[in-house]
Image 1: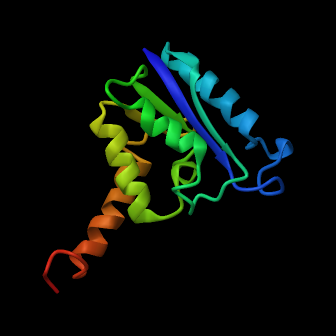
Image 2: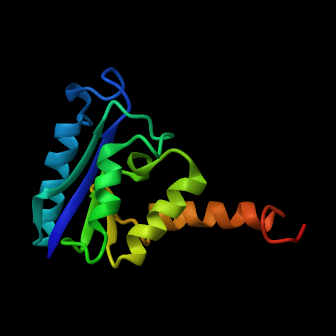
Image 3: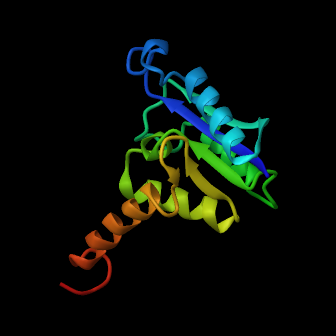
Length: 141
């Protein structure tokens, strides 16, 4: 399978090369993870946002490119991220982003803990569902 990756860091000081979470290190981890699965990480399908907040969803060129690559049919079957926070820091917007990626038929994986659809993203989805169940958006209290 061909894999893609989304890598992001907020600012130059937040994630340095020394702590293993720089943009380049995230790429390396994604490539290593893909290799353990027998996949090929396509360099053309690595989407990066450097020095961009996870709370920002409109001014992220890498994210915009990723979303554009989903239609009409993505060239990759899995998207590797270091962890959910790389996709976004706003629960509702991140859930929407996860849904768009999965609706395109792309499986989201974290380079540290396996399938996001059975792990980090399902937990985020559960948090969003809990917020709705508290009377926010479903008409109940």
